[in-house]
Image (cartoon, rainbow, N blue to C red; front, top):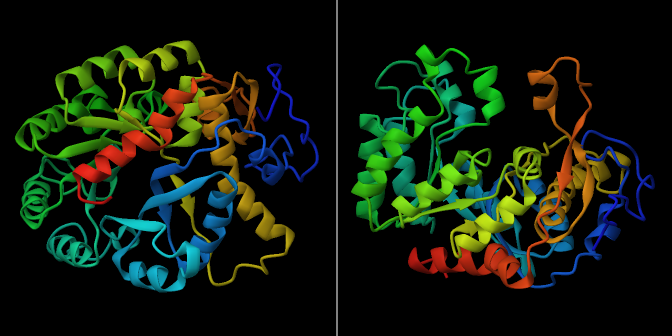
Length: 367
């Protein structure tokens, strides 16, 4: 266990304080203190470049990540594949997504998207992601917006993907309750949180032989009772625990309930981090302090998630959580959430870290 039950680490205060490391932890040393030593699959990352992949894999190596799946723009897939050699070759696999950096270009989410689906499949991708966060309506408004999960172009793309052979669909349909209290307060524009799930339920039934991965605990870590019922209604739906700040903030409020949820849903909770690895060509030398900060950015997510899942830690998260200040402006902008670990037993950790994802990937022809 990397920390005591009181929430203090032996490495606390030994590293520079940053937004990713408010506790000053030595994340490399901390990585060796966790009890679980089996392989881990990270089903949910965002790796933007060959340089980002290398730095990300440094953190992944430290925290036992055997393989990861990433949402990466099509134009960057081949350069990343070619850059990873030796034991790192093949450890990064790709999820089909539009190129969100080109969202202002015509066709990015329509005709261009349909071609991207075919090109991703030709490169070996077998998971496709449908991002339908309510904020997508800010740059593609309207009742038939291509950002809506059930829009005509999305349905066309789903059928194309299905016909090609995709059998794992990933979705993002809702955001934190804190966002519906603030950014999405206008329900006439964004709908309520529960409104986001109506098209998903229809599509789960339509594509009943596809495994659907609900990103970020299905978008509802705030209400595990509701989420348990949703899983019971849809046996082809699983969730991942990505979006570290969000999961830490909400699941730590009820760690025992979270442990019960995992126990009650074997094979239905997958490990994911949602790490966004985004170095540019102007990155400093890998040995510089700024590069260490980049490593800490990624390693902090793995430290927090593994602490949440496999320890009884009860103390501050090392990661600044901006939502705390958004909901209550009296809270310091550098505040971090409380992290309370669920202390899952080994059998459940093995299921979350590896077995559940392996089963989904095998069904999708990926293992």
